Length: 337
Image 1 (cartoon, one colour):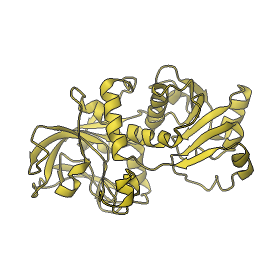
Image 2 (cartoon, helix red, strand yellow):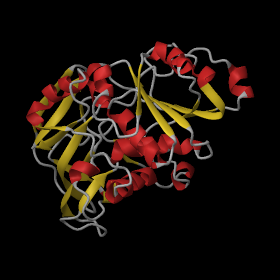
Image 3 (spheres, helix red, strand yellow):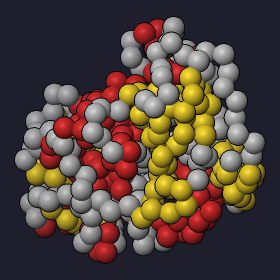
């Protein structure tokens, strides 16, 4: 069995491993498609807070159950893979906040992930398997994880006026945020990026492109007399500008992406206070977000047909990462193991 193994920072190798064995009460999943994302690139290049090495990477995948000793699963069932295992017993799990479980294990981060042909799920991790809706192709279902992260982030702002939203970053996740906001009935969705090429391809219809670097966004909005009800950064340091100056009273700001600098060291707290802005962090997705993402994709309410992933074999993962990092493609799917 081939797998993409990060031995140490900067050294990702495709290796041959013995196939995993079915454990009592467990499940074996044959991976049909696994997707690369920029988090994988970050881990290869610089590491990540939750990364433990050596590690098989990958946290976006869909496949088919090959063998099962679990009473809820039979061979042949098609599944999406929720990218974490959790205890299911703690107060956070019982309230549905799985990302805050203190026993959380993230596939591809501190547990081996999905860049391999066969994945063993022990009995206690089988709750991370979600049955795919009938007719949903694996190539579409693989978007469930990043879409679920968008659902989780936007869910922090249930009471916002659905006026004008700004997504910063026109990569794959920025495109998913834009598609989700339009599906949720927002009047206007702006997507800002300093790379004009990314703005000119693979964005959903009805999006307004804003060609501007992070430092230019404030002035670009002023020139257009645009005020915002929601800001979502889909890139590092997307909030390293005085974003509060562009907000309508009662608006929301998602701290979705991490930062790579200390540029956001001081926020004008009085502007936040008097404008009653909501600032909310979001990391990963809950199990119910993942299920909702699959349902939205299955019924076509969130249409991602505008995205055209490049499909590769696992032996070409280094080239796929390089093309993704260079901005030559927005998404790369591994479809041959």
